Amino acid sequence: MPETKAGTPENRRLRLRTARFSLGSAVTLCLLKFTVGIFSGSLGVLASAFDNVADIFMSSVNLLSIRKAMDPADEDHPYGHGKVETLSTLFQGVVIALTGGGVVWEAVRRLREGKAPEGIGLDVGILVMLFSMVASWFISARIRKAGETAGSTALAADSLHFRMDVYSGGGILFSLLLYRVTGWRWLDPGVALAVGVYIITAAVPLLKGAVEDLMDHQLPPETVARVTAIIDAHRPMVADWHDLRTRRSGSSMEVDFHVVVCRDHTLEQAHRVADHLEMEIREMLGNTHVVTHIDPCETECPGPHECARVKGMIAGLHSPERDTKETVS
Image: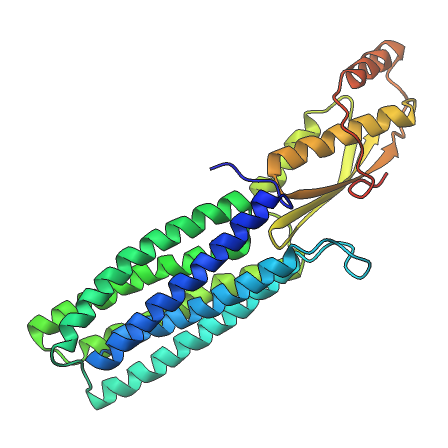
């Protein structure tokens, strides 16, 4: 599915629509599991319900953060509000880790007391977990596709949680089926313990990614390599380049670097090269804010014929209208 351009009405509608769908799905699954978990006495089902509580927190914060991140740049926030999404991811990671800790605590307590699900509620719990697994799979797939299309890291993290529900639900379903056959009382709290540990483990990469984004960690190496490949492809119009910096701000990316051009080029020619570089990088990465700074070459021109050839190449470039808000020269 192709990525939609950030800031467009289509992109905003997709992100908001998906965030509302995620929240409604999480609330529905959570209420269903809590009802069955209490009725059946299954800590495994309750552990899965608590996991959905984390999903509700995540989906709610996502919806609010996506709304705020869409606000345009203002005097107090000249770079926009994209990092609101990063803050929401950090908050969600903390909530998920705490939820997993609570499940582990309760599982250990029930293991000591030997509590286990009983009666007809056990069969209902099995059916609910089966339904939950199938529903979570389709919900995760829809949110993941929307996150990739809109370029939203918050939605991508949201889809991960629903995908986790599929794996953890499979373990809980297996334990309930096995308990129904064997009667081993430790199975339900034992699997719940494993689910709790899994929830905590899944929170770690979310927390790590959010902290890295807040600390302006550079974009992935493969993304940086794609940017440098575009710059190098413009030689000899670009004599050299340096000080490349990249970072992520919510669902958008930021790239800035210095581009060195021949000192004999006119200002219009130098701007044409910079404009074309910025345009290609934005088209390749999608939701990206690109800033360039033009430096004159410090070496002597290789010769009039080479200089004329380069100027001819520059004249053939498509030079889009320069956006003074995105390019500094």
